[in-house]
Image (cartoon, rainbow, N blue to C red; front, side):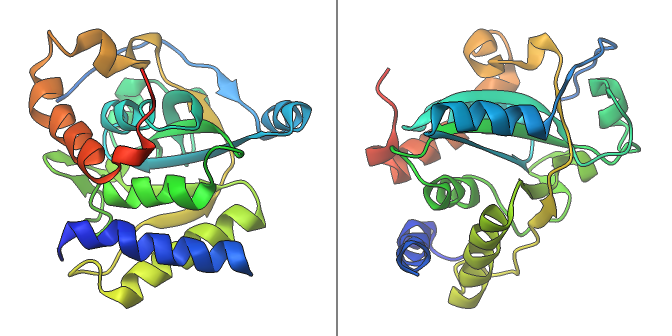
Length: 225
């Protein structure tokens, strides 16, 4: 991977061009969140939008985006699979096709989708197929689920721009697919880092370094606590 400090600058340039034209287990079932309902809710506020993506273990991505200015809600869950109402145990088998994802709701008057995806690409390795660190399997794949053509274009333009710029030593393998369904993960997965940072070694050895990387490169985007 190239000098990581250059990636925010590269993505910022792309953003300007766009705007100018651990093994865990549980058998508990989950509840779906449907696109139509989300769209209706977003229209009622006029300021909120939602994007769903995965970049490895959702404990990690949730902890990062909870700290991002302009983000109003983060939920951990599963998308992109075949089974309805999947459990964590089923997803971890790698047989359902789901990815561990987070669903991010954000205020468009405070942060744009391009800025959110800048953080997404910068805080995980988008060049490793079905793997992030020691977490391996299709459930840990790098993926963006777009809800409309505008989200698709922003995601594809940023991905292609980063590849052309040589920001990474290897091609980006992030999947960009149409959003179908988000299944909220079991309750114990929600707000996981904040609830378990003093009791789970995974938090200390895996999540903390990711948060520190985010805070190092995105100081101006950290939410006030």
